Length: 314
Length: 231
Image (cartoon, rainbow over all chains, first blue to last red):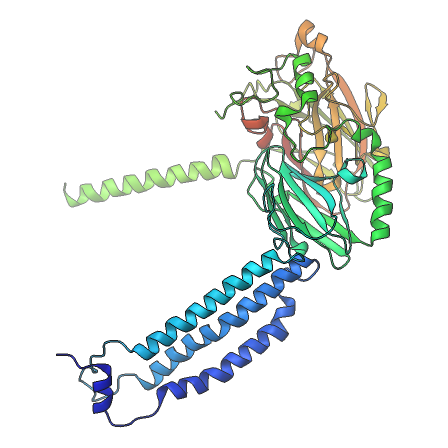
């Protein structure tokens, strides 16, 4: 009959307190790791702090890392301690005592793990809900749960093989290849596609939202600093996917207004050719293009530009 | 099965798989149509003028995809039309482009690309007349675009009229030498930074493919290619 853990411990001579030793080794390592992560590494973690969503993501990664580092340190310290102290020595040919469970250790392990995971879940949820993060830069679909307070600058992101264009409905609905945003103003990106699936990834802003045809995928952010933004497509979208990128700018509010007003006037004749602003950009349902196709005699079975059954994938 | 027979069978199977893999790599991954060199003898970064001539056809009867729309490039040495979309120009030069448009109209998915950008003066000349934008949704007058995103170049290509499309009808043998067509000319400055700049058409002219953006639209040698800028 196997001995219980308590019986085995009672039979053994009093030895060193391994738990205390491991704790004393682990504590300074965990403390040092957390301090380095928070103060040295943290400020340089991607995606930076150019916007509320980017700063929120950086803060979240710092918190997650600070929580995870002591756990990882404990595992590594325990492995190192076991290899060093509990290793097989010459002359020790007998098996170790059969031990079945340790209620105290198991309870501690489960409790600590549960507390950490639940706290991080609550923290993550709060980070999504808080108005400053408002979804933490991710696409929230056409009906966002979390919205920033106040009015937002509307920017429609239209992905197409292999370029992003941007429409500004509050400035006459002009469309341009330039992404310019004002600092300190909440922005609502209405992300869509007019062909295949793309993904709008404004790296420094911490914004990433899938661009799906026929869908308005909404993402929020508020730029905190002026500077340059790199926009890339983050969804394999065809031959020149790797070249589907552009650069944007975050400028002062006055500079943005001057740019928007100037561009609206400059592109007025082009804007007149565009379809009326809508949150999605689907050529199959735009009346003007279907009219043009009918006039050209290029129609499918349903008389539409690209009816569902034509063309088909060969 | 004897041991030698097994070894032979294994070797044959291995060689068959290796040959298949090699065919895929050579035929699909490494295939790149020839690049036509313009401005040979021209010194880069001097602003010298180089003349590039292309045509876009409603088909490509010299390829294995005769029903795919296609661009062709004229060899500056021989004057022959070549089935390729790659060309080389010197850096820092003025590039004068002439494009013969033989294909019929198709509306743009996004009429924004009806605007001429990136050319000298942001203008193109259609049959000699200056044009700054073409509305493909009113009258169906645009066949393709010639766009180099890396330098902000976008030029819509005008198409023959709908009446001409019916009679006498579009050119049906590539490269086209007769039939109704429009002549587009424009100029742009090649970048001073050497390298490859891809170009593409923005009209969804890949008929038979989802959204018209497959087939020739995604194949170098048809409706997209590379402009290589050399020093």
